[in-house]
Amino acid sequence: MPVDQRPLAIFLMGPTASGKTALACELSERFPLDLVSVDSALVYRGMDIGTAKPDAATLARYPHALVDIRDPAQPYSAADFRANALPVMQQISVRGRVPLLVGGTGLYFRALQQGLSDLPEADPAIRARLSAEAEQVGWPAQHARLLKLDPVAAARIGCNDAQRLQRALEVIELTGRPLSELQRGGSSAHFPWRVLKLALLPAGRSRLHERIAQRFDAMLATGFLEEVHALRARGDLHAELPAIRAVGYRQAWEYLDGDSTSGEFRDRGIFATRQLAKRQITWLRSDVGARLFDPDRPDLLDRAVDAVQLFLGASDESAHDIAPTA
Image 1: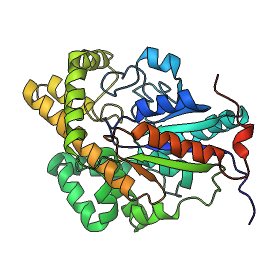
Image 2: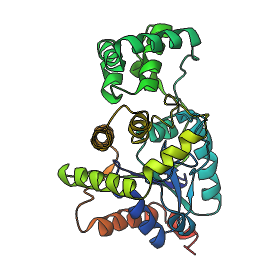
Image 3: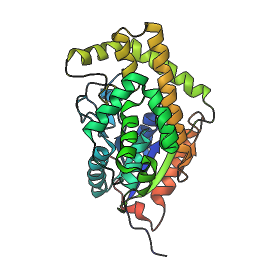
Image 4: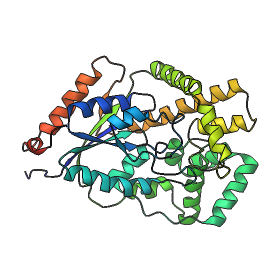
């Protein structure tokens, strides 16, 4: 059997608040790993507190590629991520090190490894009509419509995720086929890395829910609302931008618009984060190639270290040529 000569890469995946960043930093202390963020919110500059972005000291010690690469006024897509991530990974491999991609945006991981489907270009007229319809009936009603037309896509799209609901319905109108069916085609491009997938998957959700609530309260205590105030003060941002639709930011924006009380804002923000975690967990369970780790087990780090050590040292002794950690 021919030996797989592809360079190595590691995916570290998990729901929000599961401890991915801390584990990634610990692993990079022990192995020649360079970190690459896989997060649809961390790409935006000036959105630090509400995204739980690693602080400046952490990023200085453990640099993360693809953090702070976009202004919040600029949309960022899975295609953009793939275009950015592939050359970064190549540069890391050329240096003799191993890219460790860490984050919770499952669509980005899938687009990176499987490629992107050939989907139709956006149609402004259809989008405008779908938005107008949503203003009349609400996005949850549009989600119910999508559930009938494409239940697979509806299962992974939140009932208030306007951008993705609009796109899924638009694709159906343009092609007559479900978005989930078209996405299964993917790209035939060969992914040029051999990947170890590590997934943090809590055995129960109560502890995760506690961490989500504690982290949200910590965000509020460290100036999350002041951060959103500053974004609003720019004058060029609005609630329909992908950046502002990020979990927490949407609820903060609505609160500052006077649409909720402070208590309702907190509850909505925590609930939205829990829903995000639920969708992320569902996606992780569908990835049959991932090694699952309970983040609440005290031996998490030891087990992850063992998995990485085995991967880096496996198959034709290729790990001997990997540059040591500085």
